[in-house]
Length: 232
Image (tube, rainbow, N blue to C red; front, top):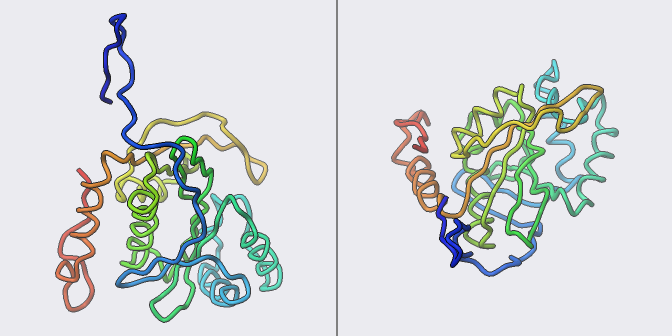
């Protein structure tokens, strides 16, 4: 990272380039070519999400989340209602262009004083995993934080044993920063937490690569990518 030298000959951090604090993070509506992201609505989204998540009959998608899987619609909707009312995390539904919810993600650990926020509590149904929609939703949420709110740092954290989440973080341009051992616990077991981030100085290059990959010209008539998303 850039450093300066003070009058005592000591290395010190570079001056801030943004004014702090940054604006608070609030629920937001975001629209892309293939997907929409909007604040979670338990009543509207509950049936679609429960149906979409039910395609994961074994419940593998819930393994690394602190709750779930849910056995019935009512229990799930009750949890969504509680989640919807929260101010940190702020849950957002990920929708098809027609408005069908296929997953959710949240902004959390929101820190306007230092200009940082985490994206997490992400759960993509089998219908959403590995799709253009999934990538574009993550791009839209990241772009909102850097372009609209001017934050300095965007974080991703996961169970260090969660290989798919770690791979997703790397693919989306996050840099691995290390693992905090015995950082927390959930479902009666230990969690070592892997930390990843994107910082504001990296965002222009990350943004350009997202836009290149999301361009319709990068996909053939069957919707298959011509080239991979690469954040070198």
